[in-house]
Structure formats: C-alpha cells, structure tokens
Length: 244
Image (tube, rainbow, N blue to C red):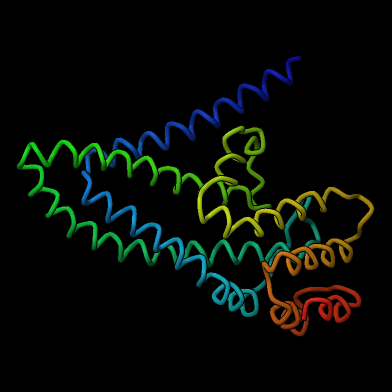
C-alpha cells in the first residue's frame, strides 16, 4: 500500500507540473497580446516543423562522424541507442538556431503590440486571444519536453507514471502523427532491453530492425555505420535487404 501511495503522489506531482507549465504560457500569452503571441505561436510551429525535417540529415552526419557512446544500465552494449541520441541533439540544435531567428521577429512584433495597447477596444480582445494562443503554445512546448524526456537515454523517473504524458504525446495535432513512428520505436526498443534472453548482438539487431521498420533510420545510414565499425550485428546484410 505504501508503494502505491508513492506512485500516486509522484504521478500527481508530474501532472500538476504539466498543468502549471501550460497555464504559465497562457498567462505569458495574455501579457504579450494577440499580435505578438501569434508571431510566437506560428513561428514556433514553423521552427518545430523545419527542425523535424532537417534533423535526419544532420543526425546522420553526426552518427557517421562523431564517436558512439557506451551506455550503462539497461542499455549497456546497445550501440543503436546512439542513433536516437544524435537525432535528439540534431533536433535541439536546429530548433535553437531557428529560435534565435524567431526572437528577432518577436521583438519587431512587440512594437506593433504596444500600439494596440493604447486603445482599450483593441487591447482587451488582444490580451484574451493572446492568452488562448499562449495555452496552445504551452501544450506544444510541453509536448517537445515530454518527447525528449521519453527518450531511452535519459531514463527520467516517474515520467511513465503520468496520466497526462501519454494523452499529450498521442493527441497533439500534426506532431503526434509525425512523431508517432519514433515514439513507437522508442517504446519497443525500451521494452526490448528488458529481455534478458538477448545478448548485445541480439539487442542491436532487433533495435536496428525496429528503427528500420518505423522508418526512423534509413538502410543507407545503417550500412554506413557498419562500414565504420560503429554497429556490430551479425548477418546485417540480410536484415538490410528486407528494407532496401
């Protein structure tokens, strides 16, 4: 009974933090006003979409040219996890650059919003609409944060106990559809490493198969990693032939 209470408490704390984060963005959006918040909201969507599509070529370059790390714990000997790690790094890198550009546009939009605030008729609706767009922005930011924290290399405690986490990850328009294959691949690989019957070769082979199955990686990348000796999988050629 004590264990159940602890799980319930930690689950409620995580869900409360998620709700507070979304509400905080709503308040910020209210303060920004409609015009400035719209620039932020649209800019973030564009930045996320562009970062998502640009991450793969950058991640492939990083995988092929930077060293692979040897993870411990559940992922000991699972070299394929490095592919996920570099995809996350590539996504964050592109997103950070785009956010710098977005900040310039936000400063410009702030000037227009100051003009709107001088009129009460336009100022109040602007703040209300800004708050609504702020809440939506908060959901998007929460989605990205949860998606990153769900990556197997982070192993953040209690994330899986949250009731809101799976709901947000599965129901955000566009992002859920676009990242759904990656989420399923991560889940299957995470379940895979708990299988005590597989050795490191079996782990890597199955992890690569899952990533190929969900189109998280291309056969060309796996072949390139094999040529560089970064993945050690027996009979890899026969596996790649199934997806070429």
